[in-house]
Length: 155
Image: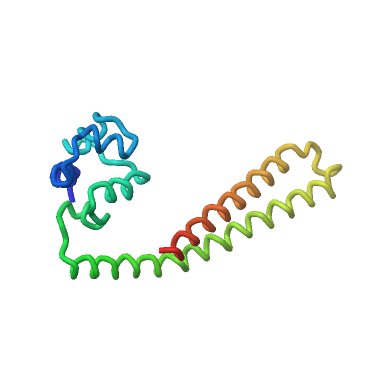
């Protein structure tokens, strides 16, 4: 669906809820200008605002993205497709989880190697920085994947 169609749909739903631009902006913590920009189709709400926007407009996210009110049967069909996509994503997340663990183990091995052979390799700043980066990326990935998995399990 195009940005313009979604913007018109936002305006239509806002009017159906008898909300002014200022009232909707106040509920979402954004400026009137942001709402006007969405409704004009020149920008879109950020991902963090999609759910609050849908609650304020009393619509489903699938309706917002379709830029139209959906019948219950259409909502069920889209929900089933979304559930299928979530199930398909889980193996990929598990692979990323393993990759993150490998990065952390690699970092530990690099630090141990540098500590053991520091005389032969000379300055150890670069290997230590590489190890720290590898470990940091691994830990960040583990945290992110954990958050994603928790959210998927809740929904």
